[in-house]
Length: 493
Ligand code: NDP
Image 1 (cartoon, helix red, strand yellow):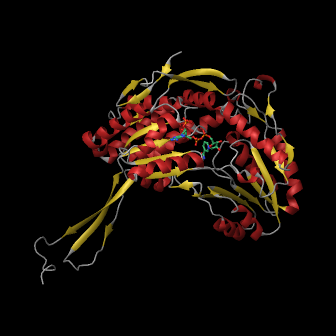
Image 2 (spheres, helix red, strand yellow):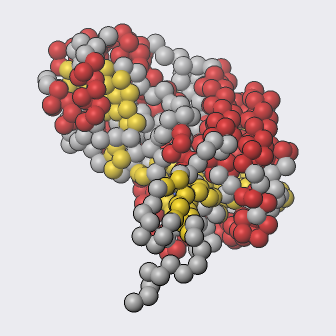
Image 3 (tube, helix red, strand yellow):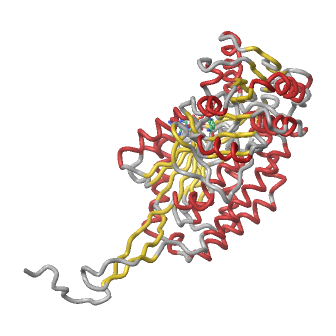
């Protein structure tokens, strides 16, 4: 089996470790590829290449914005040209349904297009300043941060790569990218595209390997100017601690336990549909998953009955067959999800449906879990407090708007939240009170390249996407100009 390698300084090369790692198809447990298994030394080489590209050559950062934009547009075109292949890759690697992977590919191409456009728009400002020193003029300009390390998780392999690589490159940085070791294949294809469009050597480097072995060096290295990470809160804390040494800029998009608040006046059928998208889309492996449904008591029984009816009707199977729900990403994640389910049962939550591994038919060897609903959940239960990252939802009830808001915010996380009601003023009031970075009214989970994405509280800091996503990868420099050169007389007694 051919081994996929690192891409460092414009060359494909194996890890110095000489070791390889198997990539598993979670739908059947079979090995689908081998990738090189990097260690800290590989990350050091990638960082050195990025540092030389940024600080010595400077070809990319000095390239005029419109020219960088041209290259990003060619990347987007190349992604679109390989869309079917990339979607199959992510489906085989991650387990998600093929049509969802296809949406990810389209979004990834659109993300490169968005940042290609944005980098050609005006940036910075011009400032009226006081004339105490004589006539002065001030403006600000945006510059790339320098060497940026980007680490992504396994739930949206290509899309998370695009969310970080597109703005980082648009801004003119040099990057070292480490995808999750669990789902590295579409990242390799993306770097083939970078090579094909002629990104200057060293501008974008790929390191394939585990977090502790290859990722930790990216967080700790004093030659890295910024690290941005999407993944679990615990790993985010490890990365932030490692990054302290040179006070590099840090961006963290972390976990969540997001509330989906449904009032009695909501359109019930619509709320059910969106709640399904909120928690079963992408097998529930979504950082913003609406995994806590807070429902007004008077409609709870009707809502839960309908949600369970819809959940039981979901087709589960290999992503290539395009079912409603595919496989959990790995055996380890499957065990984690099943562990959460067992603990919820032990702690007294009422299992409404699912709650078991799904092994019927061609799912026998894969890592499938049935869509699972727990009713009668209470605030102290782990299923209400901890991120599951699987198709599992906890139901709680409220009787007033104030109680709903208090329950929504009763979590250390603050990534997302939804509100369902036909009372427009109430929707706006509740959304305003939810301490989270991404919120939805009468829908759940739609995400747009144009709008900022990120969390409050222990869901991290910094933003992906939108204008804010570009700003993350930029420094702002103030330039003050003396309009009347020569002695000003201010420093004389
Ligand atoms: P992690 O947060 O541990 O992994 C995410 C990324 O970080 C991967 O690329 C991983 O590498 C890397 N990483 C891990 N440790 C380090 C480190 N010390 N230094 C630098 N990089 C590191 O998630 P897991 O895959 O372990 O999943 C565990 C849980 O995290 C899930 O059950 C879920 O609850 C949550 N999660 C949240 C996500 C989100 O978007 N909020 C996304 C994914 C998971 P590698 O995998 O290659 O070892």
